[in-house]
Length: 398
Image (cartoon, rainbow, N blue to C red):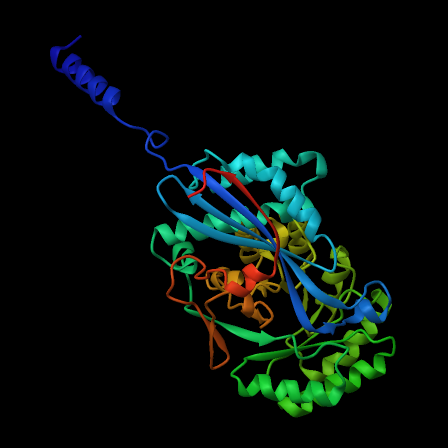
């Protein structure tokens, strides 16, 4: 061997022998706390699922919070939720999964997500199984952005600093039309950028009247959406979409069963008014089927699909297929994700979660603005702690 080559080989071997790998220098998760918190609603809420008798009015929301801390002192906060039923089940499964995080590098978020999916694989890869993973996955993304001292939107690569925002909470079916109109006015005066009201009455004529009155109040150009909460079959949905064409709606949401991907695609092809759906789906695979079927707006929910890791994959496929994005609920998380989407998205405004956090978001000129706080930018309030029904810790207490 040439002496120069031999010298280089020896030098490289010495350097390699003394070098540290990424695994050698990695931080490690050493503490996880889970909390089950019940958020009471001031007024029981009803949509079309209540009117058709398949569900009872919504009176509270169960939240599962995950607080994660590492050996080097980094922290992250994430949450999942369930409406009406499932909260205790999600909490129980999350407790089974939590020990799998101890000792893991918090930066290996995809690795951890896969580990947790396999830990609960006998329960399936959708539904409660994935929803129980969400608090951990979201907390790890929150931690990664906090460590970088960036809002999560900036860490992901934001394409805008604010997102157009619409309100849903003032237009439920339990609310009489005069009050709906007052709520619409209040929302518009507060700076909201769009209004969504619920439809799905047994008598379609009542829906048409309510939508018509709201449209007259808002005028021709203000964004207006409606949501049928899956309570029509294909024939009734077709009739409803035909009548709603006259109101220049931004979209018609969930006109069909959430898993009728083909039917939603057909309505999107048939009518000028956009069709939106996806909030009830609980995996990337389900959303992939929906996206390929051709609906106009996709409405994934990060806590329902397993967290931010699968949500980013849904975003990538949705953008590739030129679908518009309007994430469901949990604006505290979805603001950051929507800000990173390539096609101008919408954000759903719910004030319900406000009491859970010490910080609030800023709404101005129809848009919700990304906060400058690192991570998601939220910490649990004393009220959230007071509503806590259970908590469990794993690993070494900080």
